Image (cartoon, rainbow, N blue to C red; front, side, top):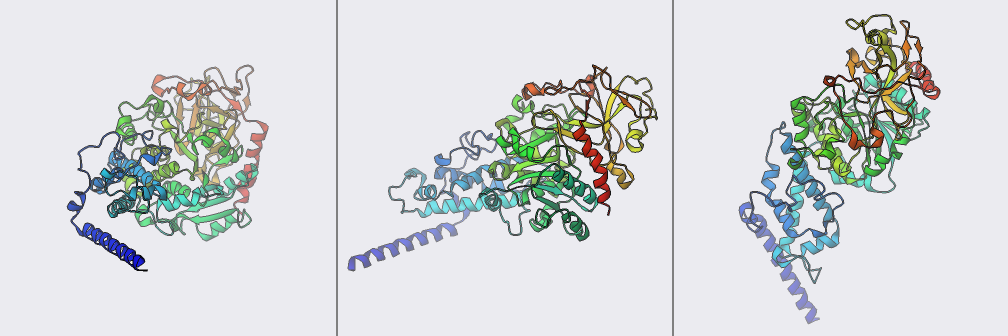
Length: 598
């Protein structure tokens, strides 16, 4: 008994000494506390986890954190002042550095969730004593304080970068933990406001008609954005469980986020209840099944699938190009790696458009995608988007790939992926001398296109409908622009009834009011079209390219090249007739559209 009492006394004294040491250390001025860490340097070596411009290959998601030592955490704490200092919203380069630093520090924090590793680190009296303790039950007060200080630093940096966290989901780690658990759920997310209700209802009918039974969440921004009457109409399409509406404001602090309109989209993805999300705009319609997106090899490999916009419409201006490059780590800016340029027309300096965000697929059970999506959300918050982003790119659409790159999750390292196929135009055949606006808005092929009277031999495909191919590149999978010939005319517009589609293939575009676009076909190809709109196929001219489309993409994305209007070429866009099964959808659209008005 006496021996046991002596042992308890020793333990009590030891605990008291440790507590006293902790209090003295915590109450000391910060300069004195920092003096216990290794001396700060003006720059970090390449091996440092605080070298914030390391590429993801240096310390990627799959990196083994077993080489972490207490020194890494001490070094991180030394960067606290730099990481938390205020910066201008316009300074995208510095924002990128801090987000990449956050990603690396957060990975270190995740490593501490391994209790064996944490105990090993916490047993270090100092870096000089090493990190392997013969007695894992012996903990150093100093080491524990370092790790606690580090955790507080990550939390503070997180709050400074992502102020929009609020409600029941307080941190990115909490969010990630919801999606990482099994079984993982899949679903479709649509963002819609009062002005999009009829479009969204037709979109939902399209999903179900394609044989897809995945649950659907329609996200809106506040109760007035989608009033109860319209929420009820949308949910009437389901059984009370498979189609629901959700207010994204219930999950975030919108006084900090300030989101609405386009900016809602990444937040809708982030705060949907599904681990694997297929997001679609309210005006997206399906010729194939949404299920195919989740089976796409690119999605299976990266947990993402991004689609391309028209990339030969406008060349990229210097300011937009510099903005896009500024999100990259400095080591990837001058020059931008060829492996990245080959996948991205904007970073190749050829196009002001790269991504089309009508459909975006993200697997949130992968932590790399949480980091990318977090950054995309940041780029769409009010101050950042208004002062730095939307004045350089068109709305939200480019912010997805920009967010992944800014977070250090680069396409060059396979951290997100593009479909290998360019976009397609789905629409009506016009001659070069026919006015596209009259054709689309009034179904009148007889009005001359002023100044182009001599262009009778030119063929174009014109419409508001931009589409995309399936994983094989052989057939249309989905398109946006909605069911109307001109959605901007609202109910006054008739339902669209297109006849053909063509792959962009570096061809020239014309753009008119209401986003009416015309894709020029390869010279001496395409059907004849009369002034009453009658289309006559020309034999041996309009060839169905089932595998190649003549665009070179089927032989590998590294062989892409971009041709803009200044190069004058019409490219090789070839007209393909819509097949009977595809035409059937457009016959059905009129019925669906009329039903939404009841």
